[in-house]
Every structure is written in C-alpha cells, then in structure tokens.
Length: 338
Ligand code: ADP
Ligand code: MG
Image (cartoon, rainbow, N blue to C red; front, side, top):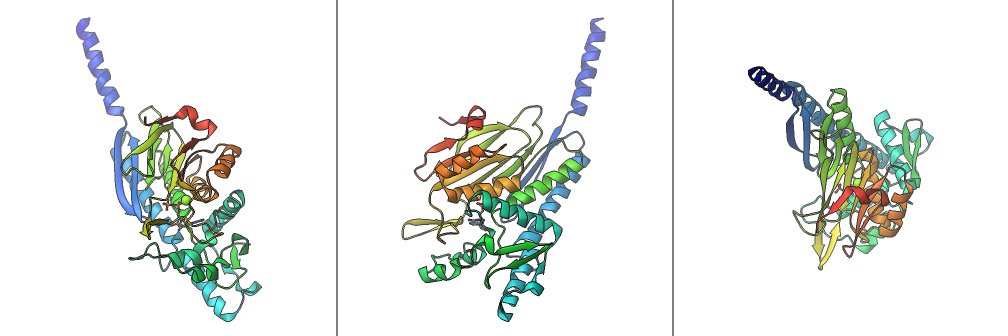
C-alpha cells in the first residue's frame, strides 16, 4: 500500500510539473525604450509565438504612430498639414484622411484633453519640435520662439470629422508620444489574449500591463523612485491592470542648474514643474499613459482630485518636494519602502 501511495505521489508530481506554467520572456529596444514581454504558459512553442507576435504588433504601432519615422501615418499627416500651410489655410477640401485605428486614438486623445483641462494635448508637436529633447545637445529654446509656436498648440484646433483630420491654423501638428506607448502595450496584450495566454506582463519602459495572475498570485509591481536611481518608492499588488508612470527623470537635461524634461505644459511652453512623477493604475494602458502625462502637468492637487473622480482609476503622485500622495482605492494595495 505504501509503495502504491509513493507511486501515486510521484505520478502526481510529474503530472503537476508537466502542466505547470513556465516563464518565457523577451526583451527588445522599441519606441525608444526597453520593452519586455513576459508570459507564463504551459507550452513553450505557443508562448514564444505569442511573444513574437505581440512584439511585432508593438513595432507596427510604433511605425504608424511615431512623429519621427518618415513613412509613419502621423509623420505623413504633419507633413501634409505643412504642405497645405504653404497653400493657405486648410479648407473643407483639404482634410487629411486618417486610418480607423489612428482616428480612434485621436478621439481618445481629445477625450483625455477634455478630462485634464487641456494639460494633455497632442497638438504639442510644434513645441516638441523646438525643444529637441531627442537631439544630441538639447537646449532651452528662446522665449520668443516658444511664444511664436505656442499659438499653434491647442487641441481645440484639431478638427476630427468622418475619418479625416484638419487643423484650424497653419503650423499645427500632432505628436502622440504621450499616449502611443500605452496604446502599443494595449495592442500587445490584445494579441496575447487572442493567442490564449492567460498570464503575462508587457512592460514598455515603465508603461505596463499585467494580465491575469503570476503563478496564481497577484503581480507585485515596483514604482520607481523619481530621485533615487535604481530604487523603488514601493510596490503595488494587482491583476488585469495597466500601471503607467510619467516622470521628469525619463528624458531631461540640465541648463543653468535647472532640470528641463520632456513633459511640457501646453499653456506655458515650458516643462511642467509641479510633480516628480505620476503613476496611474487603470484598465487600459493608453488611457493611463495619457492621463499620467496630463496629470503630471495638472499638478498634485487637481491631479489627485481628478483621479478620485474617475471610476476604476487609481494613482500615486510625487510632488515637486518629493511628498507622496496615494488615491483612496490604492491605499490597501500599496506597500511603501520604509
Ligand atoms: P514617457 O515617454 O516617459 O512615458 P510620457 O508618457 O509622460 O512619458 O510622455 C511624454 C511624451 O509625450 C513626450 O516625449 C512628448 O512626446 C509628449 N508630450 C509632452 N508633453 C505633453 C503634453 N502636455 N501632452 C501630450 N503629450 C505630451
Ligand atoms: Mg504618457
């Protein structure tokens, strides 16, 4: 009898191990950042195929939404808007056709602008161009130059109708840098779900989504400390949720002892200086991405009030002094370091 029980146990152990989900992952440099996709699955070939397809999907999104890739749809729109500029103001005949996919994202961007009182604004493009954060030696643009382009930044002047876009003023354009990474994460997760993956994490340089649970447990996600490199503020435990952080430490330069970073206040034309970082937890990464950027500009008080008002949205804000505030629904899910 003892032998029989032992045999059964051995069989059970083999059975459980054979079916157990293993971790498969891949890291690539995409969208100007390190992208990691991690999957827990019981079939190696299926897991790897799902990871490859979702990486490919993120690359597709990047090539469509980047305002820097000549050949991307956004690049083409900005170029056409400029060409039209030379001919005179856009008229009804000069609407630029937009793909369904981009059109939806443009509409979502407008929705985010409305929620954030215009602090999230993809018509930031002309400002973004003169700040040249991506260049070799970024420097602060002249005051006059900022003032000159500020009048082209206003989401209200981006007109969307019947799958087409037009701009109210000559010189306007769009940059989706504040939402495209999140959108790419959502797109990757859709592919993973389609491929029957139940447990995964997609992380595009701090913009992430966790699908299901990790080996039966909630995912424990670290929130980066905005001032101490390599350290975390704390961890949150979540499942089926996007966690997206906008911080002033992602891309910046110092000039005259002042930090100039890549999240611009569309009203002033200068980097927003009310926060060090904003983390948003929500059901969709695109929404969380845009909201984090907008709230970063909106500031800690109005920002937290907005988070508390939005159903299914939680967040952590670190203000410019480094003080941390946590939304009510996150208090029980977050563990701060010391
Ligand atoms: P990260 O790229 O570090 O995740 P964000 O999601 O906050 O950061 O996005 C910053 C990017 O969004 C900038 O690189 C720029 O392309 C764009 N951007 C900057 N300021 C704004 C703004 N106020 N509204 C919308 N997009 C912005
Ligand atoms: Mg963002």
